Image (cartoon, rainbow, N blue to C red; front, side, top):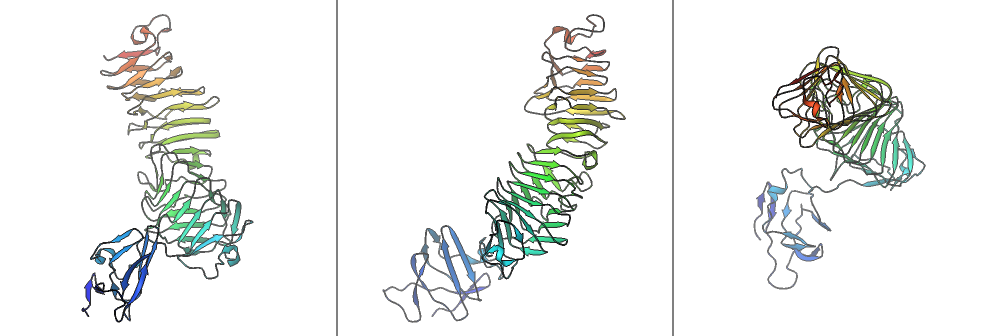
Amino acid sequence: MNKPRFIGGFPFQHLRAPKKRGTPTGTKPASVGGSKGMLRIHALTRVVLTSLAALLVLSVAASALVLVRGRTAGLSFPWPVTFSKIFASRSARTLNTPVGTNYVWSNNSGGDWQDPANWLPARTTPATTDRLLFNNGVSETITNVPTQTIGQLSVTVNTIATLQAAAPATLTIAGDAGDDLSVAAGSQLNINTATALTINLPTGTTGSISGSMTLSAGAHRLTAADATGITFQNGATFIEGTSFSGNPFGTTSLNSVIFASGSTFVYLAGSNPFAATQPSSVVVFQAGSTYSHHGSSVGLSTSGRTYANFELNVAGTATISGGAALVMDQLTVTQGTFNYEMTGTPGHAIKGDISVASGATLNFNPATAGTVNLSGSGSPQAIGGAGTLTFSSLSTIAIANAAGVNLGKDIATSGTFIVNSGGLLNCQTSVLSGSGTFTLASGGKLGIGDPNGITTAACGTGSTCGNVRTTARTNGR
């Protein structure tokens, strides 16, 4: 018999297949995943090979390791297998394979989380590796959620699962194979009681939300330890709901929550999602995502912040101010009055369309001089909508988009509009007027629907003709 050798700290013995048919002394034929091979089981060794479709589980129960020569169910085993690359340490025992037990919520009327009979199979002995599934397609409230560690939590099949804790609690999701917290498209995971409940994803775990989540009525939290630990995918919605308090994603794990393109964050109450002191942030709004503000100014954080698309939808007035750069893509005022009072020239920017709906108002009215750059790239921006749009005397709008900013409505300004070098303002048939100043800088471009729009001379009393009718007009070309 060959003496045992070691690979990666594990003892193994190279067993050669017999040259003749039959069973050699001390061995027993074994079927592994449908293919025959030869296994010799040592006294202190147990190797389990399980082939399920394309899934391979290697579980080592003792200190010896036997190498298998052969092929099972479409899975090839090169010879020799480099097990030192598979097992980084003696504690590594699986290859990205689920290890916990599935428990499916079975009470369509909701009920007590801690009642074993509400789970299938009965969850009589909760373990930190348990994978909990809500997939019965109904709306249900699960009460008495305790402080507990589980392996995974998923909500699927258009299920609406609302969690409630009887006492302040933290549900820690320790992780398993794949996403550890998942809410499928069409499904919801909500928390709606005054008693605070935290869902925490420690380091090494991930969450993927394609449906929706609402936290309301208390100081609940959804936290991840790692950067990009939780992602709200295209079509997902997170709602910081009625009577919520605090920062929904905590205050310490920077860049841990991602809103991907097509996802939406809706604010109704509580504090802002950025949480950390600017320019640091717990949340990242990627291009194409939307922040929709439906509450007061209290929850708005704008100085030094970067949004993607920003919507104001309040039945009242919201005011923002600050001297650190505020960057947005699209700016939409759907309802209410929005006072944009950002000051200075740190690089405030709007990179998409500006739209003000009928009955709504957008005022650029800083308390001291402030400049906003219309600085999109690659495609034109538009200024439009049937609502009211005003610019105070201390407001400067600087156009720097080479693809153009298209006026879709008449604008009266008391401040300054300047087309910077490389920028393009397309007036189309709209008029820029008022007591303010228009400047076409050297290298800037002006698209007109009236040839009088480029003259610096008045074309009638009060400059009542042309696309540009401001009191002062400067042509730097």
